[in-house]
Length: 486
Image 1 (cartoon, helix red, strand yellow):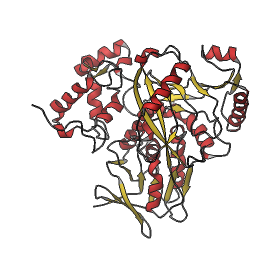
Image 2: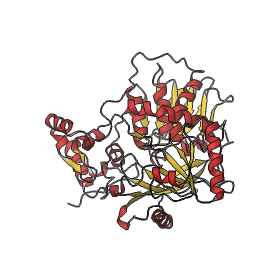
Image 3: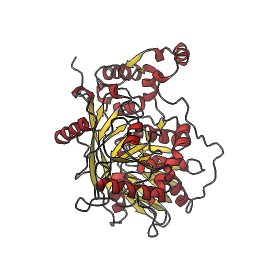
Image 4: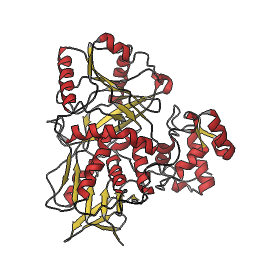
């Protein structure tokens, strides 16, 4: 069956969703095709959740311009989308004279990129911001912030859907062709989509989308970064982000401690090139390394503070023998009019996402008439945060109106039955276990689902009629159960 629309977006990560939301302001029909059963299942949910200031990027590059612009846009965007955001600043720390030289270079570069408030601090000034921090000097960037990366990605998608964007989850693209005026996209579901504008926002798979059109000039080299998640016992230990001064030619910014908006601390990421763009393994060797470096950065750590590991992948354009970074590729192709191509959107892709949405919108406007929508809804319903974070009076009112708010399903994170039901009945109609997890934070606490997962399974069975074969962790190939034992 052929589905006609004005714009097709391939990929529902944070960038694809930001583009979809920006375009949903206009009277255009938009289809987002995503191979996974939910949005933000790749790099967009597997990163540090840092809003970068823009000090690390060469002046005049897209990475520099879009990160500074995206950072400035994020506060208002998160207010509309009901997403937590904290501008807690960052110390980039030098341990030796070479590191101090790097700090001065970063400061000059950041100022050329219009990053506000940069200062080089001595040891005494560093201690005032973060007691106990090591190093001899640091560059302080106050506009660095933190955000929940999957929360932002989901919110962008759900708001886009509320404004008419159609999301086709589980629709991996298998073929693309171009007739005289339009692109024809075939999916693994056997469906066909046709539109005059095609946007490649496939992240780690963006080079494969290019190949479907015969464009062979790009290649993505997946680079894995592994993390450890620390228990909330350590909440408040860090008042700011602490990064080492970067080493020349590195594939990342080095292993560091990162606060999250939900109270955990992350250690990582490592940096290791891998062969496949979906190799999200956590390895014992890297976990041992992260624990060792974590103890050096935070001596009060105990073995019981490590509650989980995970990994993410960077979409590198440089092979391992070269290392370092290339600039983002964001282009409107002359050889395929209407094809807007995004390749190599690694860090700071999360920070840059809203600015990339604006840039892509301008490109789309060359091919499709963008007439303002009369009833664009910029805000999501609800409040920022979770039920347990609300004032006591507000909690009591909600419980009185709906007793499901009074039943706690996840003890570690204090998530209620009502929040679980809302996560199951989300606007994108995803009901995988990870989809529920990312929307509610259930299963993210110290016991990692040991208490709440059986209760969520029971809710899905009793209230939604789930059979054993209906429970999927994340994808069609990840069943939670094979059947009943009795």
